[in-house]
Structures are given as structure tokens and as C-alpha cells.
Amino acid sequence: MGARFDAHPLFAFGGRTSLADKEQLDHVPGVRLFTVIGLLVLNGWGWQQPLPVSRFPLPGTRYPSPENKVSYVSNSTVPTDIIVVAHQDDWQLFMGDVVAGRIRSGARTVFIYLTAGDDGRDSLYWTTREHGALESTRIAAAGLTIDTAVTCSTAKALEHAIRKCTIANTESYFFRLPDGRRDGRGFARHSYQSLRKLRAKRMTSMSAVDGSAAYNSWADLVATVTALIGEGSMDRTVTIFTSDPSVVVNPHDHFDHRMSGLLVADSRRKNNWNVAYYTGYALASRAANRSKDQTRQKVALFQAYDGVMTRANPKWSAYREHPAFYAECMLRTYGRKIPWR
Image (cartoon, rainbow, N blue to C red; front, side, top):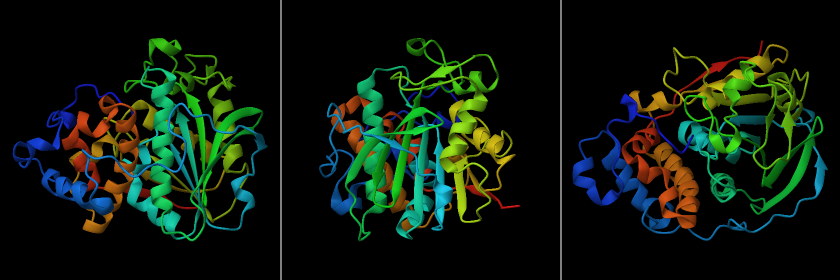
């Protein structure tokens, strides 16, 4: 999810910056429940208190960077879930309880983050977002008997360098393409590049914010993601989870979210995969449908991410920017499945 909201009716009820204003927030459906759960989850750590120390280096620490070739996920006979999202907090907000359940079931889980989620800011901001995503993943894998330490390297797919981090039975790939802003216009820092423009052929190429890779077309990007999943795979055990690209089912969404779903849809024209599309920003306008346990799971995952951001800079907390909206997301997960043909 992009860090910056543009004015929109879905977010009109937000804007509080602290849980100290609970009485004023109680009229918003779900916020009171979210406040209680947020203060009790993870052995009592609340939004105003730090999370336990991360088991990976904090921002500013360099990971080791050996080069590795990609081990294509379709080569495995183990059930594999591919999470294709635009930003580092998207899956936690929109499908967190589902993804956590799959990880804990033992399914091999591969996260593909298309953009750096940079919001037009410098590298300290977007690398912190990556660390937050990895902390959410570590929390999701908690309880597994395998090691949840983080190891990172540089992988290559179709000769494109991609940051790869492994935790337990998960792999995370960070493409680090520029955040396109909610409307797809892009930011000045990165010459107004965006996934929306690349797909519409309004740009001839798109480069990662750290200069690690460049994609010569939308087709090049689609082919690279397809290569990570396993080009030509007909494996019924592979399921892709992503943002719903439909403007009817999922209106008012961030264009980066929509492009993630369209990338999967474009790739699926030649590859027969199970796909699950999940609602994004429109989630807050739907009826609450999560149990208390599912809500706790979503809170824990998002709190892990937001805690990393807050420790680096209190002003980077997404929750404090729009608490009512995030509270609503914790109570909801909506998706639709497109089955294997």
C-alpha cells in the first residue's frame, strides 16, 4: 500500500493520529475492537510501545549479497503460494490472515514486491519498508519448527538482478521499481516512472530505484515475474495471490495495486495457474467478515510492519496517519478465486 493517501470518501473518516483519542474514535465501526486487540496482541505490546527486537539488521546495516540464480518455484512438488503485490504492507492489510495460515500450513510461500514503495522518498525509507515486510513474514512463520532467521542475496531472473530474502519456508523478491503514486503519475525523484505508464506504453523502460535492474517493456517485466513463478507451469499446486484488477469488484484502488493484478492476469493468458484476487482500498467499505482470531492475526502482521517503520521514524507509521481506515481493514478480507483451467 502506498504511504500517501489522496483525498477520497473511503478515507474521509480517518485522520486521527493517536489511540489516545479512543472516545472520539468509538463511533467508527471496528476502531474500538481494533484498539483493544492492538493493545493486547503479541503479549501486550501496543501501538505506542516498541515491538520485540527484529531478528534481522535494522536499516543502515548491509545484508550479504552473493549472487544466486533463481530456483524456479514450479520445480517444486510442494504446494506453492505466490504473493504478487505492489507495496511492502499490501498483503498484511488485504489478505494477511489467509497468507499467514498458508505459511503455517507448511506451504512454500514466495512474495514478489514489484515496487520499492518509496513514496518519492530516499533509500532509508524504502529499505525500512522492506525490513518491515520481512518482520511481518517472520511473525507469520512464528511457531514453525524451522529456523526463522533472515538470509538475503541477489538473485537473477532473465538476467535481471532482484533482491531475495529467505525466512523459513518463504522467499521474498524485491524488484524495487519506483512507486507510481496512487493515480499512476509517479514521483519527480524517479522521473515520474510508474507501472501504469509502462503497461500503457507511455514509457519505453523502467528502472529500479537503486539502479539494480531495468525493464525494457511491460512484456519484459511480465516475463521476469513469470520466470520466477515458472514459465509454462501447468502445476495445480501453484496459487497466485494478488490485488483484484477489476474496477467493478475493487474500485478506487491504488494504480500500483491494480497493475499488480493486471500483471498476473496478463501472465495467466499463457500460464495455467490458480489465482486469488483480493480487494484493496475498497475493503473498508465492505461488511466486517473476520473472526476475532483472524483479526488478531491481521493486527499482529501489520503491527510487526508498522513497528519497524515507527522505530526508524515515528512519522513513518501508516497506522497513525489513518487509524480508522487501518482498523477497518483488520476486520475484513475479501477475495475471489479464478480456478485452474
